Length: 96
Image 1 (cartoon, rainbow, N blue to C red):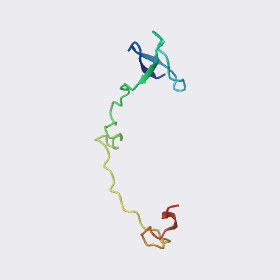
Image 2: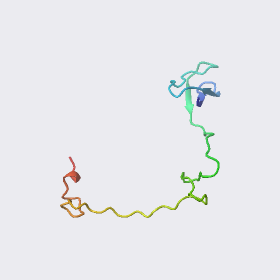
Image 3: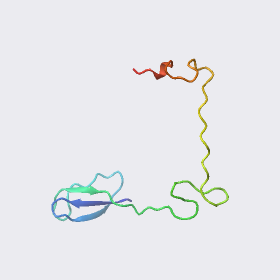
């Protein structure tokens, strides 16, 4: 279950609450019953171990690092395109 952090607007108490994701956020402080706001705090979730890198991709098959990105090829014009690559004549390109 996730842990959420709240701060009371009245007594400035910062506290954590373990809640289900589907639960509604708290609205009152358990200490003084003042209004609370949900805080954005750092997560403790980290990806560790072999195969995880800063770019989010797993290692290559040989385990020596991230895979190199393939160069992006320009899209080919479909044979049925009457504009031969230009979109100005295409009915789908006109604004409604």
